[in-house]
Image 1 (tube, helix red, strand yellow):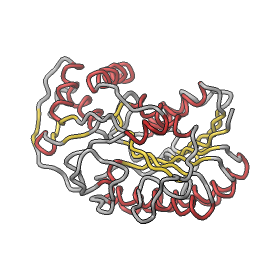
Image 2 (tube, rainbow, N blue to C red; image 1 turned 60 degrees about the horizontal axis):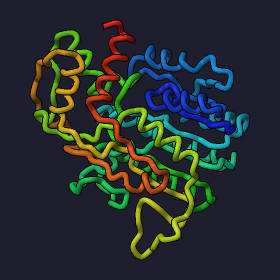
Image 3 (cartoon, one colour; image 1 turned 120 degrees about the horizontal axis):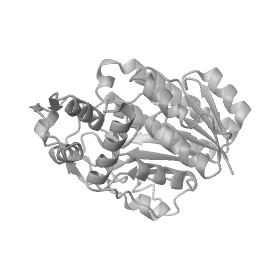
Length: 336
């Protein structure tokens, strides 16, 4: 099979994708800097699930370290690259923008150049539903302009898409960006709502409910995300023969470049999401009702018709089912 370079391999999505790639026979070289944005113990625990696999190699490395990253590209010569390493978090970007500049801009530029020199067959990279920013038309489509981000995190993800297109155009390098919509599930990130709510509710503590519980998110289960990612990885971007420069579609190009939404296409009101957690835990949450936070979007909803047309797949796991699986994992992992 192929040798796949996976950046952010100790992250939530990165670990799950690495497991699936190894299970189907690929060789995976994983990169992660194991930073302390959230508890590194969880990252080490994820990494332990794949660390002893004979076709897995781990390199503790920061993608912002150009010299080290390009040395690794020279050694590995990966067939394809799945770039998931990034400084995550919308609200953290308000206070710590430099971390996003380093990881998401400098780091991504280093990955692009490494892919170009190694002549990789396909670069797939993580974008985000947050790029839709101030857009009000729902569901969000890849055909929509995304010129009004409301967080610096979103701005860096928009920048990644533009940077990738330039490499696709200049060097004919197939690149595909995936706009993830609120990913959740076992081994998830502690800074995300599901993790924080579950922890607080089990401890009998109140949860902070922003937007007075009326925010809407297109919650997408991790297994659906991984299935979509791998299918896209296996189908390199190609020039769109119908692309019209007089009426450009931002999701395609005359270059080998594509952008796809990966979302559940089932927008869920935050209070209904909390109700699913309450049902899975068998308890009722104490709630602090609060206004929307700076940098947050009120609603997200994914149009995944382009993804379905490209790889024949759209996420569909119901929130009630996905939340129950997370709660089962959480109780088992933390023995709660």
